[in-house]
Length: 229
Image (cartoon, rainbow, N blue to C red):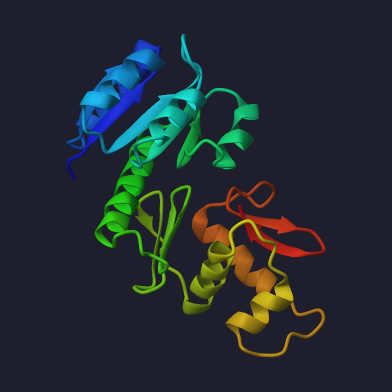
């Protein structure tokens, strides 16, 4: 996979480490230390993805992302050392596609980069008509091929698990009740005290490597249902 990737971070050690790992996968890397320098490069250099640190010496990574989004649609991955920044990023209010908190595993970063590039390439090839493919922060699910990936790694799901995950992804941000999930997926009448959905949600989380108490993807809204933000 060939791609031009922009890395913006004023910490040279981190930027150099990221560059080494990305170059080992065949990517071409452009480093910038400031947001101003990055904007100048974006104007003259075709790019396929950008990795932006939130804390930059001149403008914030959020501001930089917003400026990039005015004219470009390539994936943007944010790096943050602040937990409180996460909600801003996951809200996608600035146009970021994914985020990672420092310190991070370089191999996971590379996997997320690959996942974003694959999503971007496939969406472009389909002229973005892709209602059969959804991507949520590195979770990619394709209804037409019945395939699913998490951070560029395939998830092996049963048909029931796939249908549950698709419904949650398709209704991203909405709370879906266990009753609605059951009747939509199993095509049967939901009965009180039916824990079938709960069991399948637990299996899905296990396959996705999700912690039970604070899952990143499938959230439990107690007394209401489940959702994916």
